[in-house]
Amino acid sequence: MTALTTVLTNIDAIFRKELQSYFKSPLYFVIAGFFWVLTALFLLLIAQNIIEQAGQMDAGRQLGQSGSPVDVPNLVLQNFLSVMGSILLFVLPVLSMNLYTEERKRGTLELLATSPITNWSVALGKLFAVVTFVITLIFPVALLELYLLSTAKPALPLQIFWVGHLGLVLLAAAVLSIGMFISSLTDSAIMAAFLTFVVVLLLWIVNALGQALGGVLGDALNQLSLLKHYSTLSQGVLDTPSLALFLSYIFLGLFLTAQSIDLFRLQQS
Image (cartoon, rainbow, N blue to C red; front, side, top):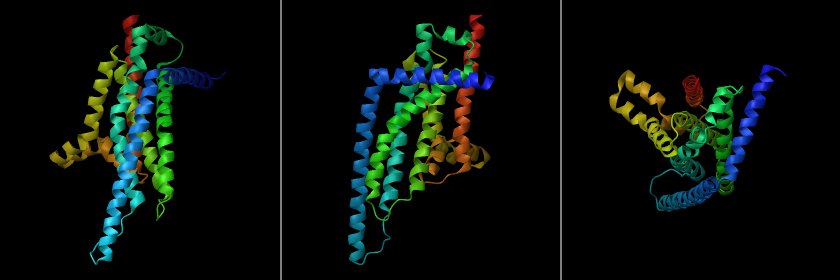
């Protein structure tokens, strides 16, 4: 067995173990139910509101008022993805808070830290599992979106739909990777969730600070904003800088987690 095969086998073993734990926990079924009900409600309200606005504008044009036709499916999608991103900011810290804190509480972190499985393999397996769980949350809602938007005229280009949802998954992976690092630092799940929410909120709104400062520093802060780059992808624009930023956050979270476990290993030796 090659070294690469061993690494992939270890990642797969961690992935399966972690994913099974989500579907065995009542907490995650509560999160799933809350997420589906809330997002479906917002989707219907947003669609109804935009359709009503489009109807009013059509009636106004018939009476001679100026105005361009409303792209209903595109507006519904962009508004809904914006709401979905905001909802995930509250849900994802809860999902990431137990990635390592439970290991600390049960005393199994020492076993992980001293096992032949590398820290990177453990972190990747855990991240893949929680991102997969998030995809299972998003998928039913995406099907509902497709059903609603398929009846719209003009039809929404599928590229915009899929790129927007790719942005949603990348946003989730970036936040969860950051949350995983924070959870490796404490044995308090509540503290891990709170700190993750604070850090992600700062990364979400840092573009506002960048706009206030202006100049080179302001431009740099704008480029760090999760909101700015998520908004780009949610509009259906497959932007290389946005992809690079999300992948950088994911890598940073994994790297810091691996270093955190290495430090824990040294403390225990």
